[in-house]
Image 1 (cartoon, rainbow, N blue to C red):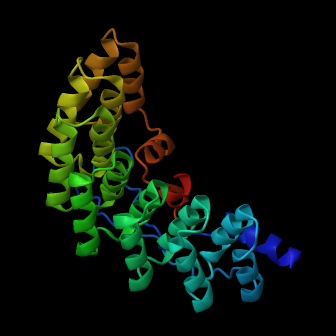
Image 2 (cartoon, rainbow, N blue to C red; image 1 turned 90 degrees about the horizontal axis):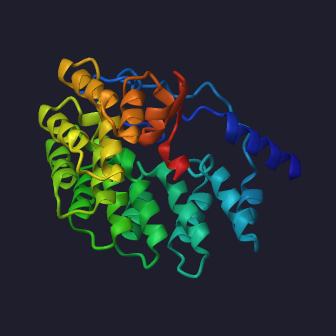
Length: 307
């Protein structure tokens, strides 16, 4: 069993990620430093993973040690599509109010990899809407990001939570999860309204700015973010993300001129952000705007891995 676990862990680290978690938002409106980053990747059907024995994995998912259960969940993402027992166990762990919060949170993350299936997706929606644990709700909302563009029920749920959720951290999670749905004008409009509203706290407005990165090709979004970036009265928590977001449309004369003005300005933090926004630091921008990473053309690392 030890050897099986070792092989499974190595496979987990090195295996291509196929379609799971791949952003589906089109890049036709996105003209920035990473506008080629969302090319459709091919499935990894030719890759054979060293599979963990189902019985061994089920045993680990029931281990007394919570850290062992969390580690087992990371391996379970590769088995859920094959083994119904594993899939059912992960859903059970996510819903079990007696389970450790850290384990439930990881179980919600694990369900992200099969949220194209109706039952796991419904479990995530139920957890996001009404679970008692904030950390579980946050992860459940974020775990739905990759189906929000293609599934109107998920998209509407996320948009409604972004507008009206009372728990600030949960609300920001819903805003985070909408980044891949900004091809929908209702979504980009809702996020823009949050970003420019003085009634909102800066942390919530900043999250909306980040989720608008792929929509910066829209003139109304670009103009709103530019106004935030240029407003010297705006606090750094909000202004810096807005400056970074201008990297999505650098090359436009208005944007380049605004960045040059910031570079020549006296605010050191804004100056540094403007210099970064003029750069080709693709890894930084993909990480900062939670777009996930692409180490090579056929490998995608979901942003959920870093949450």
